[in-house]
Amino acid sequence: MNFNESEEIAALRETLRKFVSRECTPEAVGRWDREDHIPREMLLKLAELGLCGLCVPVEYGGLGRQVIALSVTVQELARGSTAIAGLYSMNASYGGLNISSCGTEEQKRRLLPGLLAGETIFAYGLSEPDVGADLAGVKTRAERRGDMVVVNGAKRWTSGATQADYIYTLVRSGPADARRQNLSFVLIPTGAAGVKLTKLKSMGNNGAALHDVTLENVEVPFANVIGGEAGWNHAWSMLAGPALEVEKLGPSSMALGLAEAALAEAWDYSQQRVQGGKRICGHQAVRHVLSDCQTKIQACRLMLHHAASLVEAGQPSALATSMAKLFVAENAKDIVLSCQQYVMGAYGYAQGFNMERYVRDVLAIPIYGGSSAIQRNNIANLLKLPRE
Ligand SMILES: Cc1cc2nc3c(=O)[nH]c(=O)nc-3n(C[C@H](O)[C@H](O)[C@H](O)COP(=O)(O)OP(=O)(O)OC[C@H]3O[C@@H](n4cnc5c(N)ncnc54)[C@H](O)[C@@H]3O)c2cc1C
Image (cartoon, rainbow, N blue to C red; front, side, top):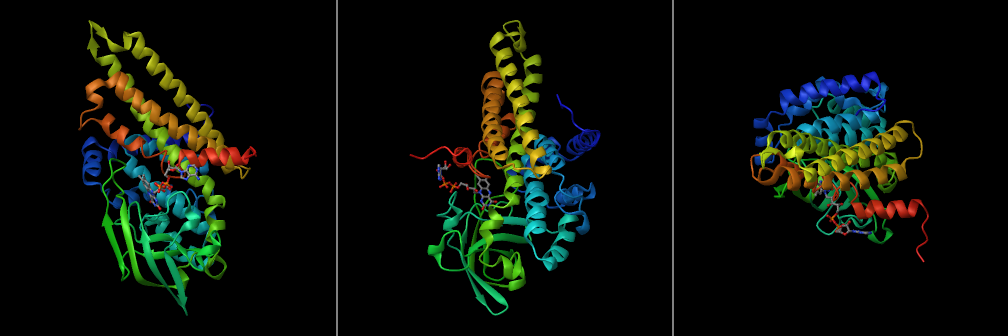
């Protein structure tokens, strides 16, 4: 079903399938899920395969802008574990791309080698207790004092904060009434004085646990402001810039991998489970559900591949990436729920089986990375649908 994929991409899938079957054993994946923690060493192992440089330019030791390969990597990892796919995506994709695109020369030289080696880990502090989709409303404040910046405020839902070395933090660095102006990104070391991390519990997506991050008079050098002088008060263009296109592809790729894993499991199960004297794959209702799921998966693959190809080629892609995020996240949710409810029965509901974890994990994807409602807004706006 892998339409026209290049030999390199086919080889990459093969390498990742081996990696996933070796590293994402049922025992390991169950533990990451139960403990809501994935060891940071997993990123070292992915870096050994050269996969942390897919968004980093060659002059900084990366492989250039390999967006299709990046999407395929996240898909394949998500088939084994959303924990590992999430940790990888936040670093190789968001970290690699944002620092490469927006960092100063000094920041690139200082931070990218560690990122490429899987040794320096980044978490993202954008959301706040009162700020979700409307990031222009960020309240966490940063004040410049000579060569230092002092940060006060609170971030919420910061995934993987305890594994991370830095929180890539969106702050208000000037008057609040300016909305999209006066925002900056500051790299805050998780071990800095005044940083407090509190783990939050959620129903799924376990591995890179969600955290509340309290920032009380946290002092960091001005050298940690992304983009330096040029970046101070100009984070909005970084947020809404080229990195955004790749960021929408991360959760979409994760959704596709997860849906593929769920469907593969339901497909096999339907051929083993016997009811009424025949395998349930022989019941028309089950056959139709599985056929619909296969069709939706294929549509998701095509849509995601198209969006990733446009981004990789540097062509306009805002519409394609928003449509892909909306379509793949919503269809992945439908696919996983159909597999659980109409094929797996009680074995899809009981703890200790993969399907129950797939359900918990897939439900988060239409929420983060730009919710489905926000993608619908984007699509209507990009297609210039009049408001009145
Ligand atoms: C598993 C998970 C991991 C996350 N990891 C991180 C992380 O690492 N770092 C981080 O900063 N954040 C993270 N988040 C937070 C995530 O980015 C936010 O949940 C998301 O931005 C939505 O914000 P909200 O939940 O506050 O919802 P709100 O913004 O309060 O929205 C509530 C509802 O209203 C809808 N809505 C809001 N505004 C509009 C609008 N203009 N038009 C139409 N509908 C609208 C939304 O779609 C949603 O359905 C994570 C969330 C989850 C679930």
